[in-house]
Amino acid sequence: MSPAAVRKMRDTPITGPGASAARTRLYAALWAAAPAVAALYDQLWDQPPPQRTRAQRIAAAAVRRAARARGWPPPLGWDDGTGLHGIDNPAACPAPGWRPDGTHGRPAAALAEDAAELACQGYTRAQAADRLGVTRSALDQAFRRARQHAASPQAAHHTEPSLSPGEGA
Image (cartoon, rainbow, N blue to C red; front, side):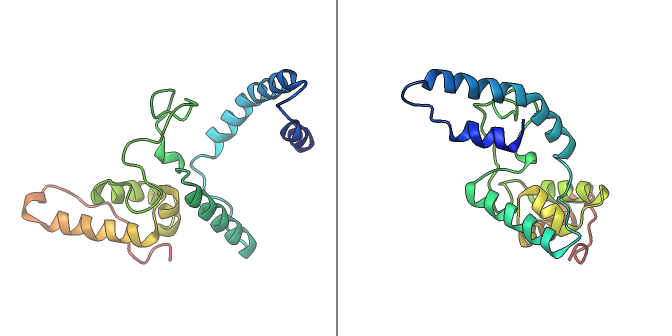
């Protein structure tokens, strides 16, 4: 569907005379676009935005700020499928413990482990923080807490995920 067709559909009133037909066209278009949207999401959900140029970095930061301001969770805030927290369920809500800031209410070790997994995929620490929907300082704090926990006598068997503090500055 072309951007012009989307704009026309968006601007078509769905109240008053012809509202039923307009709604039908809108829902049919959304239904038709759903497989393409799902395929695009599957391709891009774990990819950082392009940030080679200054303009790209500014655009990526602006989109992240807008998403946080609107309370939109990152992809990792959802479960797969159509369950209660599933991204494919129109009535779903984000997975428990998700918040648009802080550490999502997750233990520091879990957040640090998720960030370490992203580092294995080539993310910098700053990109990992963005991907996980937390601030860089929250991620740094999670690593400090995970290190403290790992150093405690009760956690002698625990190993800390690796992502050096200076990485991704």
